[in-house]
Image (cartoon, one colour):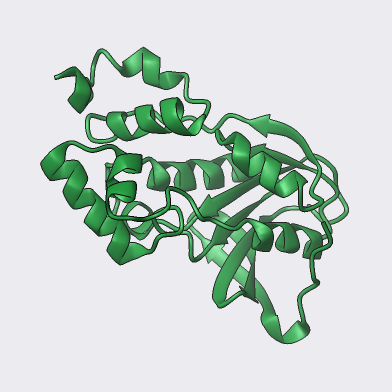
Length: 215
């Protein structure tokens, strides 16, 4: 699939000094959203670049919500990139609640808390799709950054398929597993059982944190 190149007016970049070190921050405008790539070390025209494509999650990424693992995954991805000495984190906007938006996501939380629904049933009960995220911007960003192939930090097979169908060579999938807690074990179980995510740690800790269905 051919992806349109970015126009100069839709890209801006500068150094970003963080507590982990200095990244090259590259901002992109695409499809009504503004996305960010944090580039660490040498990645241009390189193969097997360590990459995390991270979907926006305000509640997890900013406020540290424990009902998902998003904030932990964001921190772990940046730590891993720095430890390796090179890599890219792509932060995709417009992906809140797997694409349904912040208000709708919070409404699903009400059903999860009050009626014990999982992350899928709470969406469909409200007449919402389960996952409408578009990874086209991520593919366009990787092509703009001249990455030859990637090792993708992900537990989601659909994300790999989405990138490969858009012309990105995924040389390997790197498991990106977070330890569950009592607030997200049901969420992770639903992602494993109903969305096909590769989450073997759920079985390891399920006895410690029974889901609503087990109570």
